[in-house]
Amino acid sequence: MARKDSDMSQQYDVVVIGAGPGGYIAAIRAAQLGFSTACIDDGSRDGGKPAPGGTCTNVGCIPSKALLQSSENFAHAGHGFAQHGIDVKGLSIDVGRMLARKDKVVAQNNDGILWLFKKNKVAFHHGRGSFTGKAGDAWTISVEGAAPATLVARNVIVATGSVPRALPGVPFDHRLVLDNAGALAIPSVPKRLGVVGAGVVGLEMGSVWRRLGAEVTVLEALPAFLGAADEAVAKEAHKAFAKQGLAIHTGATISSVATGKSGATVEWTDAQGAAQTSVFDRLIVSIGRAPRTAGLGADAVGLTIDERGFVAVDGECRTNLPGVWAVGDVVRGPMLAHKAEDEGVAVAERIAGQHPHVDFGTIPWVIYTSPEIAWVGRTEQQLRADGVAYRGGSFPFSANGRARAMGEATGFVKILADAATDRVLGMHAIGPLASELIAEGVMAMEFGASSEDIARICHAHPTLSEATREAALAVAGRTLNL
Ligand SMILES: Cc1cc2nc3c(=O)[nH]c(=O)nc-3n(C[C@H](O)[C@H](O)[C@H](O)COP(=O)(O)OP(=O)(O)OC[C@H]3O[C@@H](n4cnc5c(N)ncnc54)[C@H](O)[C@@H]3O)c2cc1C
Image (cartoon, rainbow, N blue to C red):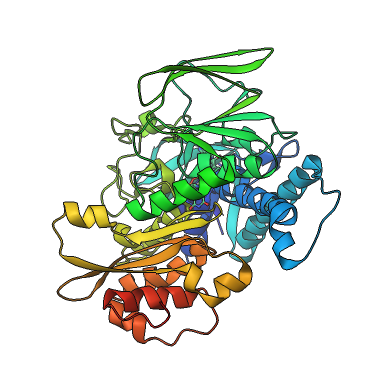
């Protein structure tokens, strides 16, 4: 725990600024490694109680998955149960109760993190942390909040995360024009919902409100739908979402957004260049996120911020200042909770003199729509662009016994392997629980496995994971069930 000096500053080995997945995990790992550790976070709930967990816990991963689950249950009861012989009459949704459940799930996670801090002897400071200068070879950080404090540490981990980007000239009014926090708290199902941006957040939030009955229109500026995903997966996803009633327009350029009594009026040009006007009861803007460094006191100590606003770091998360590190959304790389966590662990271990490694090539990507989409490694189009000779194998869930029994037989698993060595270069899945299946592909790539290795591993029957094994068998042209 901290030593207090005569000037009442508190001395720690490690101070972490931000308790999102990057920061709180870094703090716990640092404490496990024997460092006296403090973590500062300014997130609040219920009139001022601490709400550690960052974007992920409060307005990101966790609440979005809570609402996806609620809305999927509603959709199953409405359309999915009938095939099982279950008829539901008088189905309705109480949005207030659904949102209250989501808030409860979030609060459980906030409290869980505070408990983990206690268990691991991490000192938690609720407030805004800013660099103020140096004390010898250590950094001084002031905490502004209900209990102001000055912390001193030789090692500081910046994990201040990100904030939503607004459309140029269209600020969030948190009433009609919503960011991710607003999208997770719409008090009743909007009749007409507009979503700007067909990325992960836009598709997940669009799915939630569409399943509950909203007419959802998604406007995406890029010409291709889900350009980062494997082409075959993106095509299958587009087909599935269109069937569900999500109207997705790619190549859409927004010229203006005006808010008034009738809602948000969006003037936009479609991919063919035709002018369009759409009126929405709510408009969710999900066009990406910007790193958060405001209020951090970067100038006070000369911490380098790059031209895009990120804290500049090297491949090992070192900043330009000795002993100052940065992880997660506030630095380059994918804005994903598990990437932030892995960087947090790696930095704590580096401070302890260890040599961990975070491989961006094996970070999984997941979109929790229905069907779910998940991938790791390179897509077919990337392998072609990189000039890599590869072999691919796919297996559809329509030929998988468990998927058929579940009544969720849309989609497929695809394995891509090096043509010469058979080493797995990518796994792409669209279908039931793709988010869970992808872990096998990540493990295979981390262990340098071949597609034959996956094909020779005994997979339990009947499971969805048999589709992964069959996709691996398909690489060698020898599926057993197709
Ligand atoms: C709707 C939505 C859904 C998402 N779903 C997923 C998903 O399913 N899977 C996934 O991997 N990712 C998801 N993400 C992304 C994920 O939330 C982020 O990548 C992740 O939260 C980044 O973690 P972080 O620790 O870097 O920052 P954050 O989680 O943003 O945490 C930063 C924390 O630092 C605090 N802070 C900032 N400045 C200061 C300061 N000066 N003093 C004190 N505290 C400060 C902030 O208040 C915050 O609590 C989603 C994001 C959104 C918006």
